Amino acid sequence: MDWPTAVAIVALAATAAIIQSLSGFGFALFIVPFLAILIGPRDTVLLSNLMSTVASGMQSRTLRHSADRRTAVTLMAGSFAGMPIGLAVLLLLDPTALKLVIAIMVIVFTLLLMRGLELHRAGVLGDLAAGLTSGILNTSTSMSGPPVVMYLQGRGLPPLQFRATIATFFAVTSAVAVLLLLASGTAEPYVFVAFALSVPAVFIGQRIGNGLFEKVNAAIFRKMVYAILLVSGSVAIVGAVTG
Image 1 (cartoon, helix red, strand yellow):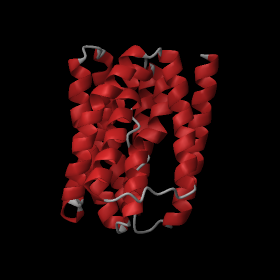
Image 2 (image 1 turned 90 degrees about the vertical axis):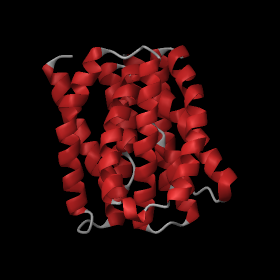
Image 3 (image 1 turned 120 degrees about the vertical axis):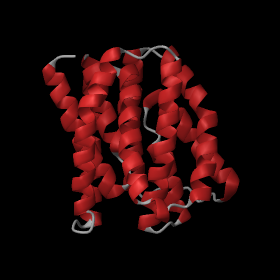
Image 4 (image 1 turned 30 degrees about the horizontal axis):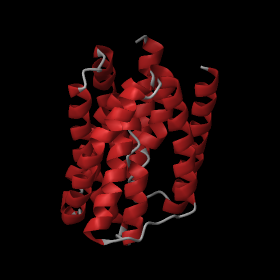
């Protein structure tokens, strides 16, 4: 890993942390397409989950009293069941094809979120199904957020409870995904160097985002996030096709 790549990863980590702390989601959707171009999709899944563990862990600690713990735990159970399936996809699918899949998924999920799609199936089975889908996506692409975001939006959680619940979910599931990825034996040492360099950037990004939360117009910010995600997905498609 050269220094320009390291600097780019640090800048991406800070930006992704700001986005997540303000909106409650978007960390992986933003950072994964760019990381896939920089370091390849397989190393991206590990690095993104390492970053997400830190970013979501800090956020969930701050918001821990507002989380819907029963929903979070049930979602986690479904996610744990789906992670081995996603890991198999990551290990078996061609890296170039995986980069293209990641890019297309970013655009599709962003468009679905922009349209306000909500999954209204509540209850334990709904929690497990959303968690299962999220788990498969986590260890295959590191983009575990959209199914859970759309599902919790359908549950009608208040904004603060939504942010707290999803942060708790991401913190735990990202950590478990890291353990599975390490157990697969495919981790490259430089990924941990990149992670160590990005931790301060994630912390700073979280602090900036938390400070802006009460000052930024939520509707305008979400439109900005959607625009950024569409650009990142489009850039990733170009990178996958021409790389």
